[in-house]
Image 1 (cartoon, rainbow, N blue to C red):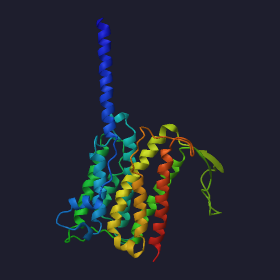
Image 2 (image 1 turned 90 degrees about the vertical axis):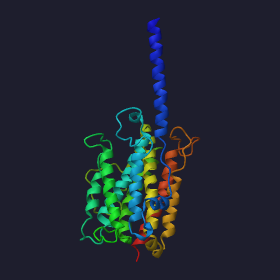
Image 3 (image 1 turned 45 degrees about the horizontal axis):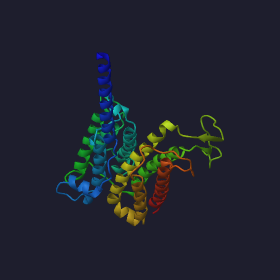
Image 4 (image 1 turned 90 degrees about the horizontal axis):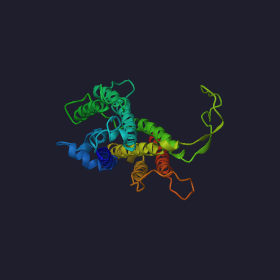
Length: 330
């Protein structure tokens, strides 16, 4: 009898713990909402108009996106080693996608936006901040990912404050069309990769076009002229949420770019192109009402969430390419 009672109690405790962990995990897996960049930046600014200081809005938005990843419900989950965080995979994938966009922007801030010409000096704050965001996203100690990212955020805050200081001329941000184009080129490749990975959810035969357009080009090892690409069922949701996190971060960065580069975009007649890209990215953040990421066939009875996401990303990427071409024109 005692053994039976003990077994029942253990079973009840396990069931209760499972329910608690499931509810906490469900709450922690809720992605942060998109927000109004102008209002959020205005709250951070003190006694200045952010739109009058080149670089302030984009830097502040980068800080805010980074802090959101660390301070959202559950905190930063990618490096959790204890339950329930260790059992979650959707939110860590979301975090990694957003982090990749932060890393790309940190690199461009260091080598493009803060420099006027190729021979100019790098900004010391950005030189230190960039590698901080490249810390392994799963490192949980010595140092932890969070501590490294927070160090990078503090350096960005110092850079932002220097931009707003009229007595300081060492820290600069240049709203040049060529600087913006360099960053957009990185974003194009990132979105192209996500589009391909998401499209592979149903499997497709792809022709090898790696050397197309250059008859003298070579590659390290030979590959088949045609191959079938299909994403593993176990990685479908990871790819989806990674793309969702990347587009969430990019959405806010481009809203900041609209503020920073308004005059440049208007001069190039490219403002409407950027606004269309933002519209496509906003569609990627729509609520997912299904409890799981469905993988129906292309024209089957069930939805395919990966293909829907790939569609929005592909359209945004096509518009990005057009925007880059407009910026390259005199």
